[in-house]
Image (cartoon, rainbow, N blue to C red; front, side, top):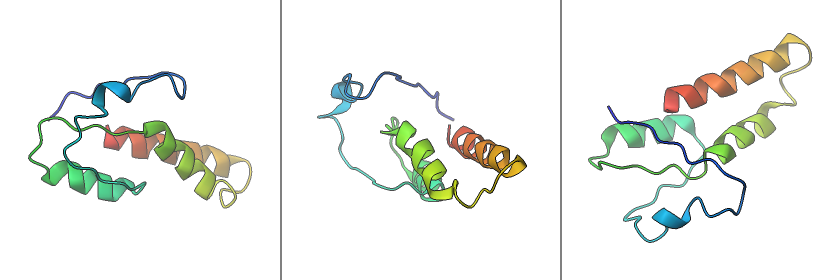
Amino acid sequence: MGIPVMIIGKSGSGKTLPFRRQFKSTFQTDDYQAILKALIKTPKKAIVIDDAGYLITNHFMNNHSSAGGGNGVFTLYNEIGDRFWRLV
């Protein structure tokens, strides 16, 4: 089990710069299940997920219209939180 570390800052503030030249392989997706599978099977000691904010925002934007109103919106927020927390 790893130790999650979050680097938080405004967009364009340079959060990715310390990692930019160190990526040996990349995996591009916004599918939480695909990310979890990749994390489980990798032999790597360090994994960088860039950009976690994109994962959260994209999930919201893809599902907000179908959430409906009232409790449906809170259900969507709970789902977003649950998926991200399971990833961490």
